[in-house]
Amino acid sequence: MSLNSQILTPPVQAASIPSSSHSTPTGKKYTYRQEYELFLRATHLPAVNAGPFVPQNIYKPHTNSDRKRYVEEVSLEGPLYFAMDSPSEYGIPLTDALHSRTKRLVDREKPVFEGRGPSVSIRLEWPGYRQWTRQIPTKDFRSPPGPITMAKLAKNIAKCVQRFIDENKDRNLEEPSNLRWKVGLRVNEVRHISGSGAQEREQSTHLAETITF
Image (cartoon, rainbow, N blue to C red; front, side):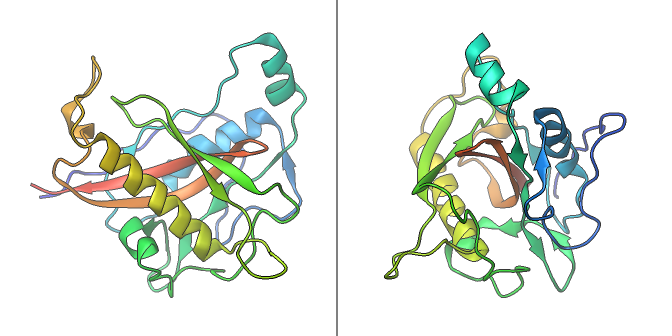
């Protein structure tokens, strides 16, 4: 049997999420609060056969200077949503992304991170484990280099999640933690839903998993 999805209650007057299989409008900027609301509301996106969302925390600065730089004065781009066709849903199984099975991925050849630096940081805050980050490239290896595509981004994120699981599968959960989030234990599928730009060079991830008994 599979665990049912857990749904978070969206905040009042939250920023809207896309009603179609597309990411947020290109070039539109968001405040930290709007981005945070989109971050929370991603749990409402339709995902066929997805299990409970892995709880993730959005970036929170620890100093006054960082708060001013990354919260009060920041202008953020909208999240990237991994939308799928046939059936229409959100979220790509990471096993499919790892093996480049992206035929159903909407806008799979769409370039992302245009005009950005050479890399972005992928951050995971999996319950029971220490914060985990890795850098992924924003450019391909063509000459001259160009921005990576949505399909390549999905694969790079999948590699990060797989590495996180491999590095932590033999580690004990930190206390207090729920055993259900132990990586490497009864996890059948991990699905990547969206990426949210908490900082200019950092992506916070939304993950859902399917756990079978």
